[in-house]
Length: 222
Image 1 (cartoon, rainbow, N blue to C red):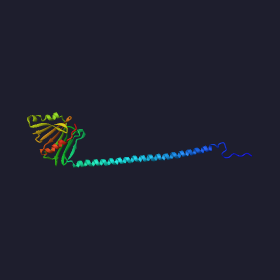
Image 2 (cartoon, rainbow, N blue to C red):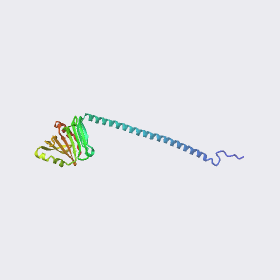
Image 3 (cartoon, helix red, strand yellow):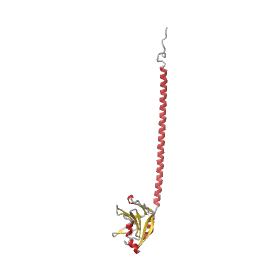
Image 4 (spheres, one colour):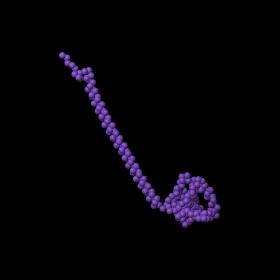
C-alpha cells in the first residue's frame, strides 16, 4: 500500500529552509542597521553637544576677557588727567589731548576754517562780544603752509616775531613767538598737513605749560 508524502516531501520542500534563513539574515541585518543608526545618532548628538559646549565656553571666555580689557581701559581713562578730541576722518583724524577738567568749544565747517577747537580752564567765555583769552586753540585751516606763513613774513623780517623750527608728532612745524598783530596771540605753532595747516595758538601765557603738554601729546596723521 503506497504511503502518502509527508509535509516536507513535496516539490517545494527545499525552499522553506532557505526562506527561513533569508528571513533570519534580513532580521539580523535590520537589527544591526538599527543598532548602528542609534549609535551613529548618539555619536552625532554627542559631537554636536561637545561643539556647542566648546562654543559656549569660548564665548564666555571671550566675554570675560573683553570685560577685563574694558575695565582696564576705564581704569586708565579715569586715572589719566587728560581727555581727547579726535577729529572726524574727513578732517584727518588728528587727536588733541587736554586736561579733563577743562572746558572746550568746537566748531566744524566743510571748508575754510574746518576745525576751530577752543580749550580753557573752567569756562570758555565771551564777555561783551569778545572771546576770553584762551589757554589753547587749535585750528585746521584749508590753505597751504606757504600761503599761511606768508602773512607773518613782514613781522618776522622786522623782528616782531621770531620763527624757529620744531617737531610735533614727528612732523616739521613752525614755532612763532613775539608780538602778533591781533594783540591776543602770544605763541603760534603751524604744522603743514597735506594741503592744509594745523595751527596751535596760545593766547593766555599763564597756561604755557599746559599748552606745551597739549602740543606734545597731539597725534597727527601725515
